[in-house]
Image 1 (cartoon, one colour):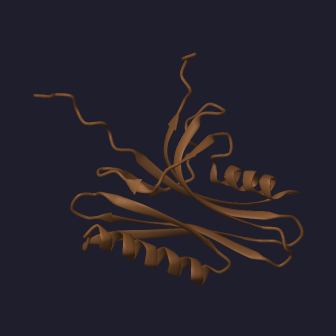
Image 2 (image 1 turned 135 degrees about the vertical axis):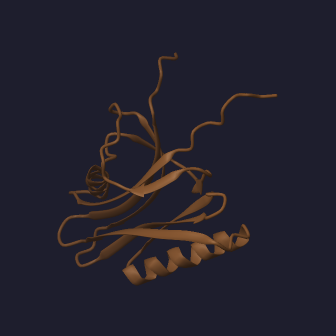
Length: 167
């Protein structure tokens, strides 16, 4: 009989940011900085929340070294045209009995459309898994382009991982 304890489920922090820069890339970096994840290499995940995980909204600093990997779910949107508004958001739902869950990531030109897409996706993903009793949440960020490019993003930070000492 295997007596190895199961791996600990992650504490997932959901954060948002928006930023402006002289290029779309520097606006993206500014938004990452506001979300507290600019100095990490982002490794995107497909959006599944392991049972037993904790999901919280937070901007607390993540313990990391410059260049570490961050396993995450990411939604981002950028704009370069004067007057353009962009929205990015994450929604997540968890089945209340098992604690298993899913994230969905969307972006849009309006908050209403964004929230609708998140809600519809969560409904579909939960229904396809047979989940009836779920708890769901949504976070959104926006950016309004005045002169320079902008970016809005939402990120679910699962785990920071260093690079180790291997060759």
